[in-house]
Image (cartoon, one colour):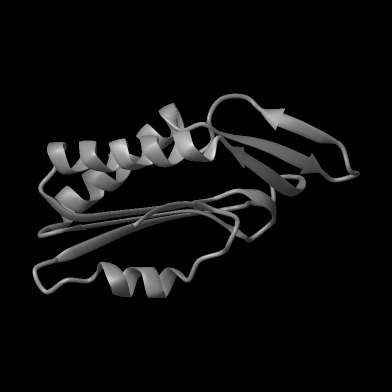
Length: 134
């Protein structure tokens, strides 16, 4: 599954979907809004391009690593501290491949997916965060 959505997701449900009898390892990355002096964030995306780029990153991961599954969900919209932002689940026969592929996917998302982050700091001011968000 590849998705860019304003809706929250159920991490356990997504992990359950990723389990296959031949999968020996599932590695997940869950990015959440952290409290580093902000009240929340707003994420904006060029959705069609973001979905295409996430699909390309998934294809790259399959080409570079012996993985069985790659799922990526990235949220957009207004999020508060503690909300889910990004979920990556990689399934493979062994943990090393799953870890390496998951890290690869995360770094590629940060490099090339057109999603931008604006933070609302305590007191109400906002600031755009330079670069891509992942």
